[in-house]
Picture 1 (cartoon, rainbow over the protein chains, first blue to last red):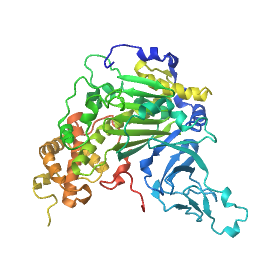
Picture 2 (picture 1 turned 180 degrees about the horizontal axis):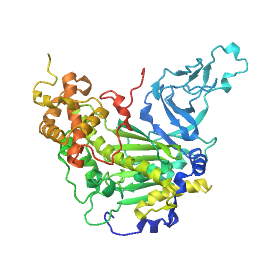
Picture 3 (picture 1 turned 135 degrees about the vertical axis):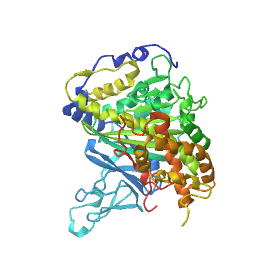
Length: 398
Length: 121
């Protein structure tokens, strides 16, 4: 499969995706963005983090969801169960948790007037209760949000009643991604970027590898080096609204000296980028040297041999988005392992900073109205797939 | 006055300003250095990095003293300067988003910790 010169292979396999131009309006129209908020973000299951962000009972974290005009509190209960709530005191609407993450001893107290909730969201103390004769504690717990955990990944659904369960939502990909052995990893890095760009433009560079030989000529290109032919993904698969890219292993790869030094001491990029790993018949089936899974609408899981990372892309406005990047590696216990991890991390970070450089420039130019449409080729079918999925939601078809 | 680096690594003292404690600071150092400074630091760390890491590996990451931390930070700076030397061939490449807006949230995590620090616990 690697390196075939076939053109149009994915379009032939997925004719429903079409080949036509894409309206720029999808990236610039406030009206379209408002429809996305309702038809996508208030209906679909959304990843908000990983269980490792709240490993112990009483641990919590807060996710700002401007796209739904709310802030979500994710807390691990004394019973070990992860739950999600709107982060809002029933008294007058102040946040219950004021920090981005923290730990409580089974109770969260509003800092405004001291109302207290337990980790199941129950209101257990009303300050000056005698002066609130009409407030019944049992009717005034934290407002719950549908929440589920899959392979450690925490998802929420903002619908009053979700149209499908989390398991049903993940059916198209669960059997594939679920083969990856997610055990033994710990959070190793986290970046946050606030960008003036539409949330789909932000995602699109992560939905195709074809730009690697161009935009990342100095950095990542060596990891996908192809001599004298067009870049071809080792695989692209669409799975329902979701999908995956396989990155083609390079024809040849000469690790630079620092990569060799890092690989002496720990998990490095040499192992990860050089070849397509074979995890056996029952293990995860790598499509390429690294695989990018996209979970509709805004979540990525990048799977490499020995590490994985995630992207959450949160719309703020039609022309503003937050990119959250989180990396997970095996635990580091000594300096050599930390150095290897640092080298690997920087090797992933700098290409993403190159991606970022393009986002705001593109977003600004798309607003000009100079062009009514943009174009995607066969190797960009996963980009097209995202836009098609969103558009189907907006039109009530998905 | 005590030595800023562990015994046996005093030869690295001329480059000690590369020993910055956070990714943000190490990246700033990388971007503010000249190509000649970057190449010199890169060369010395290529020669001495394996020795430094082998030495530091004798100790738990969470138990390093100040000179050992300084040496570790110099090793971590190699991960940054390697991009200048091995990839871009220049310290201030064009068309790269600034790290001041590409915020390394993990810079506030304690060394050797796994993930964000939880209060209380």
